[in-house]
Length: 285
Image: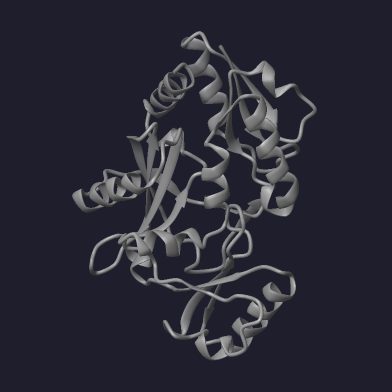
């Protein structure tokens, strides 16, 4: 069996998960190639293509969408194209909320809305603004008591044909940070803790990624329950990274990463093996 672990060409922020996965696949007698999504390769030569770090997709969205169709016609694609297309735009958060899941309060400003300036600070005067399509921390800005700058930034996104997403800054993150639960083939593999990145001036490492402080995390019962809630509304996936933020009423979903999330395999000695085994089992079906 031969699989492609799909990445991007010329990354200045390398994907540290890839060498670990290649090594673990080798132990499982699976040949794994690291291949850029836009490389001139015959995808039918692979049993499956597993998207891992296509971190430039948001800059080349139309091209990436065509690639999803092409690869899906030639081999198994994980996660599947319809799942990825749903997850490309953070308006999926509204879909999750309609299904009864607790998510970070979110407001989306569509082009043509005339009174969006008045709605901008409905949540609070400390908000986070980001485009609904973006990888990593691309385009994420925090505005505290700064109406003019926030309005200017939203206007800039709209002029660029992007949909702005407005969320309140949840201050509990400054104390407790963010957590993520990583699943493989629908089963929890490991969890991590991420320190707050918007409580000061973030440090950037390239490819629109903020330098993050990541550590191992033992998920609480509430976090485990929320993870299961999310999985219950998703179709089958090779992987999912469910990011959560703390509130006084329990954790809420900040993102469900189904496209190209870092899995932070380094926080758990057995994570790479579990992920590789789950991928191999899924592909061999």
